[in-house]
Image (tube, rainbow, N blue to C red; front, side, top):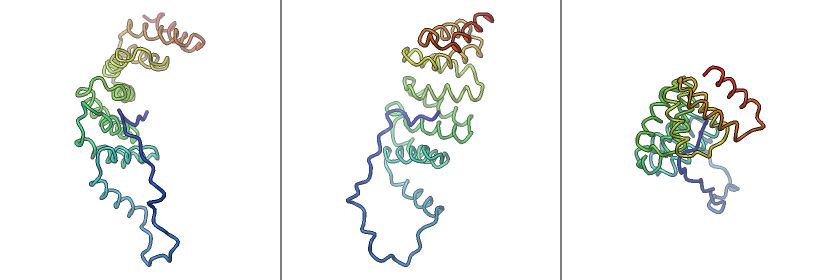
Length: 202
């Protein structure tokens, strides 16, 4: 599920030449504990810019530290207009979803989608979160916008959209999406079965 965000900036690796020489005798100060490092990182996060916070959130998200990722993305949200860059909203929604906070994730992604209705990953994630909550009406609306903005998506996207349409009792839309998925992947018998099943129950 988790997407790193709309136009999320890439992380620049640190320059090895900037590292201090650690071959000298160690100081007497003990190394900070893991909680100490986390607290230090949280203090430093208050001085970071948008791109740095997104990178920090992405690193935490990639390691499964969803709460820390959510905190970084949340700090980034007021630093850039979501209508220009939705990375913070997408990231926060994904992090909340990853930590099982589906309702909060949907609130964040719905707000982002209202402000930036052409953000592909925002709509993708909103559809996924709404599906997790079995909010089929929202999922169907999000998938409809995804397919409208990018008709040439994968067969799996059309199947997911079709399932949302079917659950929302939007039969015609479901049949069209199943048919498109089967046309994209004619060798996938699961897709043909789902299409036939939908036709029988239309």
